[in-house]
Image (cartoon, rainbow, N blue to C red; front, side, top):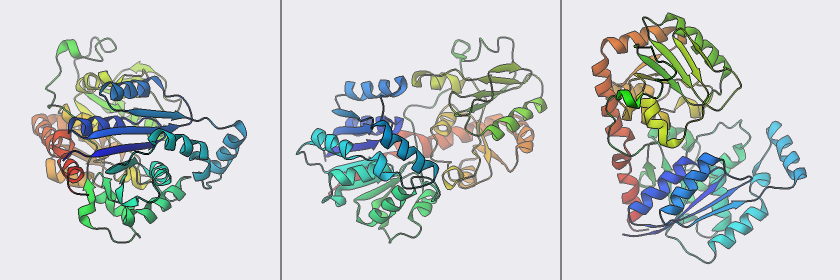
Length: 389
């Protein structure tokens, strides 16, 4: 049954917002988007906005950069770990979002993460039963937006549904909340669309210019360089690789180190890559590293909440991850990965995968079809939204 659905986002125009909008539009629903933010979108996000609009989805982008004094006060509050809610969801944002929405009514209003849920509630305070919380992160209580998390937990029993990646993250988020009917919890792993990607062709080798003479296997860490210690320790493991094998660290965000470099068994690249080239980049590797320091619950339970893992397995890349959270479940169900407790175990894990590479590669494709292919993983979500209110 066709439904009228509004997607609400406070913050950047997330790829997950783009994906959800296109998914629901393709399924035949009438979809609109309202996004509020404090500054103009970066080029990558602007491209996503253009794609959503090109799909015929009304998209309201509301930029409201506050006066310098409120910004300074909010920054000070954040540094002190205080409540950031009043500073980020301003009256101006709410008023302009209300004007964009107008008098429209919706069957469902889906808010991506707690700040967006707060904004959606401000827009529809009497229709909490039509609000759906799409949880992208299970944030620690100690983080500056813990008050948003408290608000989210208070609201959950009264909402229409919760969209979350897996039962492990649901257990974290729902701890201490009132009981919620399992029928209103929709498991929706971070997934991507399309058929599995076969082994790379020579003319699709993303790294051929940087590694023109390398015939070795490539072990890829793709993503933000947010943890300087992890990056430094990871680089030190490159010396233990065998033959012409090379460890590739590719990321454009995070700490200023490490710098770009090419060394024996090591390539560090900080060149930004558009969304349209990510598949080519990842398919140019042989093993994918999904190493998140388990310093937060969000990082600990990340196996079904990371786009790069989806892309790794779509390309048939076996994965190496820390033995934490829900990775052990992923390993037991699909045999797509090797798990380590410390980085000094990395060289042995690489050799183990390479010695039985086709078995692990088959496990990666199995994981993709079961947990990470959007056409398969979106069925429960689409069924819920199309059903009776």
